[in-house]
Length: 105
Image (cartoon, rainbow, N blue to C red):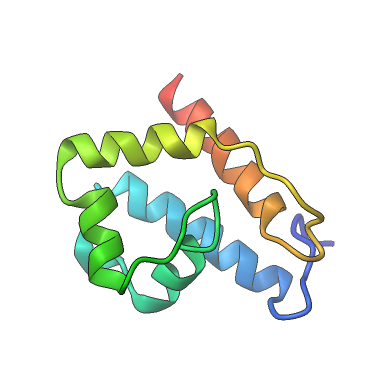
């Protein structure tokens, strides 16, 4: 049994892939080379984010400087996942927030 609930459009494995990539992305310094389009699309729909005009705009907003990266982490830590995991990524968001709290403790 997976720790993630599939949605109508995404499998439990899709959620697990997102969580694993998020953790690698953050652990490796949030490099632009680790910010593929699929990851941008999902990240822009989680943690209360909104899609920017494009992937480059989202990256610029959140990851273009050490200060912006800190703001991203703080915003993520302050987010309270909501919604039914059968319809949202709330289970994946919870996992990520818990992981960040452990990593930054």
